[in-house]
Image 1 (tube, rainbow, N blue to C red):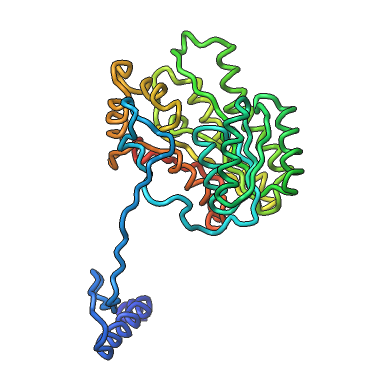
Image 2 (image 1 turned 180 degrees about the vertical axis):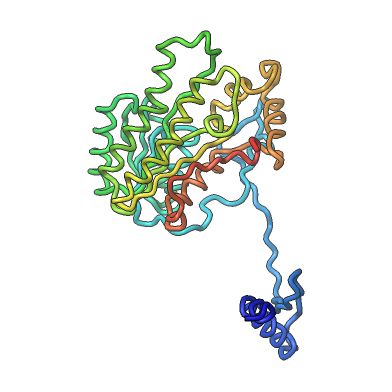
Length: 340
């Protein structure tokens, strides 16, 4: 076959499309023409829809002077549309505050019933439950410390009894730690790994037993365990780095139940502990006020803003939905390109 004939056969679908598009614009005088870079002329609708950017102040967020900071502005509306989670039941560990709280709330906004796990504050967890119910879904809270395997087992048994099934498990519980390697004690090492690593492993084990076929498991990593070395952060980063290997192996083990296993790896996220922890990442951070911390941290991302819990919750809801079915065995860094 001649080369010219081969090229024509390979590209004939594109040539045909180009011909049809040209015919369309020639025979339809009502359409407004719009030329693309490829040379294909396509009809452009005469109706233009203007999408206005929306921002929402994070509830309860305050700057150092007591007013809402510009870095507390949530981009876009809450409860963004994705494949519905209506009829699904989710369990979120460490859901009484921070990222876990927003995960639970957003799962509820999208239709899921939510089990709110907490280790300490009953009132905080109950506040989350009440807000989920106020938004039109249902929720219940269960106390359990994921550093204790017996409590993990009990939590899953009780969670299954509340709504009769589990479709989504978000393993969010974690603790942070800073300290030079030379100063780390065995007790501190064990404290961090007991929750961040061992705890997540056994949450995953019980999730396998209790999740419905086709369920979702989402673990919590960290950008420090994925892409960036941080001074005096070896214990914490190591505890999160192990999660990446868990995800790759568990995605295979969970495959016989058609359960996907992924992790999110947040960068700096503005939770209630944000300003105190963030100062550890900033040279001379102890000399900055809260607004100064925000300004410095916003400069890490080319988008020039700080990460918010909703940024993580939205990705979690995508992974939990039907839209995320073909994402499996992956760790998704969520940091606004701060750690490229």
